[in-house]
Image (cartoon, rainbow, N blue to C red):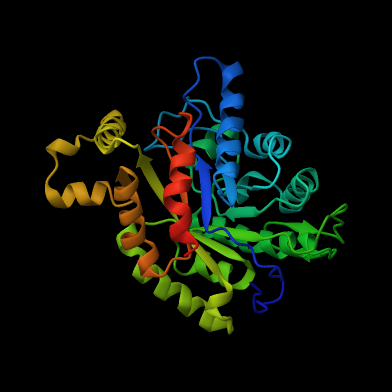
Length: 341
């Protein structure tokens, strides 16, 4: 479907990410040599199942809440290049690139090269960065919350023009360029996705620069988040309907709903959280971003807790069992009709 023009710098082509698949961990292989073939298998299964986009995280260490820092984690853009050579039609992106880890002009070059390598399938997913341990141990400046969002704003003033074929000269507090050239490019409308939950800074940048906003929050917060996004769009005169949205959902699905719920309990127990020991309110808070059960259970939960609240689509991860053959296909079959109805 055609999209109305957004603010200057926003791609004219409509990026549709109604159903995305994120791979949040790589801790499922008995040997490192088996690791990436398993990643490829998931991306190919997602492609065949009708997912729009395959995502990897841009982290160097595993995240708290998913695993320990020393668990396997692949560098995002190297992994995406490997997936570009192993798939044919699915879009490829980081969810999301940590702005603090790369010079913005170099990031523009990197994602544009991924677009060339993949035949026009790259999406730039970007956010401010937040995982302090990675910055500390890899030697990147972390700075304050304000610093990181100032840096993201400056980076977008460089990256977005470079994706559009312009040659920006920019002198800021954090970054500078002089007529930065970005060639070759397949297209001038490579999509930009912002990820995060910040109602002022992140949503404001999304309204100004992005084609897509992936909202990261608890599902119960979605009505407030969407109201805030509408306000940020109104502030710059952008039609809210030109900014596509999705929600990042942790899905644990199995044909056997009881097995899915056991996987959920085991996952949370591994992070020190015993669901059976929690009260009703505590349990609801601990599982607010999780969607668990058999296909009917998961479809009902995604519909009622996400899509019915006005979100356009979902990006799911299958943190407990996505590496098992057939699970990605099951999720795609379960959710594909919902997000495109």
